[in-house]
Image: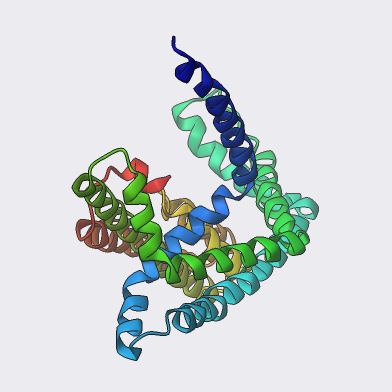
Length: 300
């Protein structure tokens, strides 16, 4: 090994040390940066169209886009989360104080289960309590950590501004340092962009439609805490094939136990229609326009 090669070792050691320090500096903000990148990819086309219409002013247009995201996404989501957390707290208190209803449902389900397995047992109260406690504790943590949420939201919006305004230069810098060729890197970026747009648009739009339909149905059929259960249905419904039914079946059981047999049948038919519409029509439509991807990856 010659002297020039030996002299490179301190440089490599310094480079490795700086890289490790940089990793630990950036690691806490990976989720924030990833969310900002996803939003920037989704908003890139309308942003570029507006910039071409006004003939410049990239900073002003990027700032306007950030303000629109704040007004129409962040603030409504915050109030919705607050509403869901309050309803989850109400359900938690009801479950804790009213064991008679849980016992009635448990006995009804146990009769059905024991037809297939006579020795089976069921502790529905503990399951329901665990689920509601989990949902409530996580939502409450979001609300109680308001300052932290505001700080992360500020970082996301700030990063979104720079990703929109400087997206072209950042992409060019990435291509310049990429170990692949220019054409291969452009193809990778194009495929990644198509995947992000297809998955995010499909997932969020389908979840929004599912949430609205289930929320309205819960409200019309006078099921308590409609906002909470509609939100749960919007999220849990992402499980392919069974998600929507996981929320519809307990609602049908609730209406049946309350003596509203026709309402239970009507809500059950409505839930089946929502499941068929969402899983077999909307989901297939959105993801067929994007990029082919197994449902398990879409779920995660």
